[in-house]
Image 1: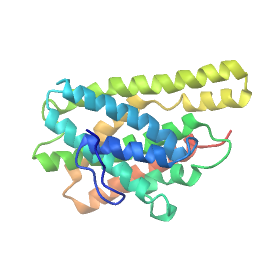
Image 2: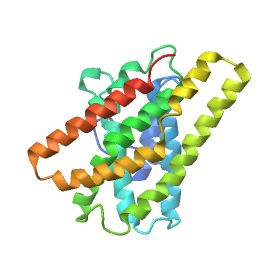
Image 3: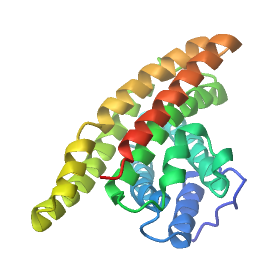
Length: 234
């Protein structure tokens, strides 16, 4: 049975709806669009997470389902504002602003999307999920379940890097080689480890308005900076 996702501006309420929304985004955008490059990878990973939930792979399926939905909605919020870059969340702005820039490779767009979504959005989604379900980040088994997703993301990152490496070898293009050297400095597992730490920090300061604002401002600025560096045309 097909699932119809809510339209732009409305949050999804299930992983099936999130998948349907990503499929709609994929159908709507040119394949070379920067957002589309990230969306394809995110869609594949979300389908795998959904399959694992059906198989009982996670110890706390309710928590992981809610986290995945909250996480996806932060991405959809950014996509909904893509027509007006000034309204796009700052962490996502480099990708949105550069999404059609010549000289930027698809792998750069994919990694820039991972950067914005993991480094910035994941701590927000973790705290939101804990508040929704009346729990805390450090409560067992949240961290162990969180780390299980790393396996999927590591495989996705390895696949897109390998495809790009094969392309470099076939073309002997020095420009592509320079891009590969550049992006190898960004790692998804490291980003998720940092995001977990930032989730705990954000949880601690969530009720202190000033501390929370300062923390989020810093998180947003550093994420945006990393995004701009990942999207340098070579």
